[in-house]
Length: 299
Image (cartoon, rainbow, N blue to C red; front, side, top):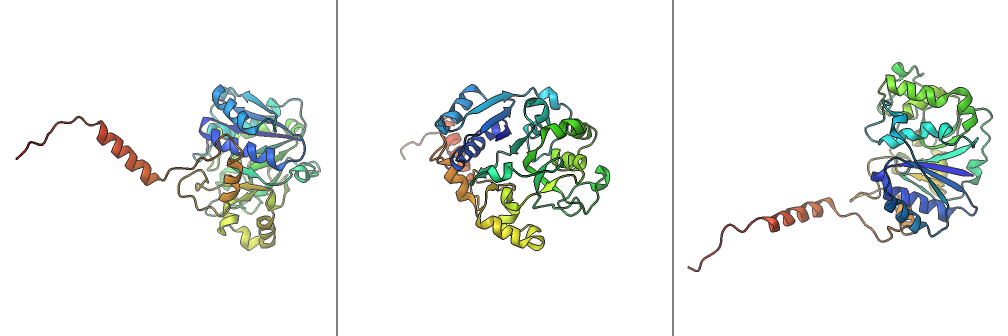
């Protein structure tokens, strides 16, 4: 089983937490490759130190020129495009499991890994916010040539048959689209447009997204039993909204899974500072730095 992730310096700690969760939830040895473009050696060393030798990770620096000119969502970073390079970056593999870095793994991934894709271009879970291209959180389905009612997947967890991607030139076509257009959800839109329905829809426990946990997604109306099963036995918890567990004031109902994994990393004990306290601390520091221009004299 080979798992791959992509990250930049901004996501160093969340990456460490995802890897820690992976190392503690699997009972078998797995291969992990992390693709990045700017992680410092000291940061990599700290992430590996937190794993305690339980997980062997290969680090691969990606030349950003490989995705130059390709659009990515303003909610993400350029590293989100690296998943499109996997067939090229992993030439010796024919299957890989991709995970985002705002994910916590809580159960064995073996059943997911063994899913029969039967010639499909990937296995994924419907997007909780926009399970169809049309809708308030959907994309420019007309511009992308998508049927407005076709199933639309989330790219935070992807089971990818790399050899099939190479044959169908999935990566090249998605990058070409993203260099011509600027769709709302970046590479997620690009992949949905290129794959165009040729994918296997997986149970929600393999990518339990924030709207599922918060009760704000359409999945509750469309696939209630699947959501309830996923909440009782999640395998991959994906913090998809902007309210991330590492942000101060996060009220995500499944944040405890992230903090449990955090304690297994080198960031154990870390907690976010409250935004108001940070502002007050900056104001106080600035006041202390002001020159003393006035003095009181005795009356």
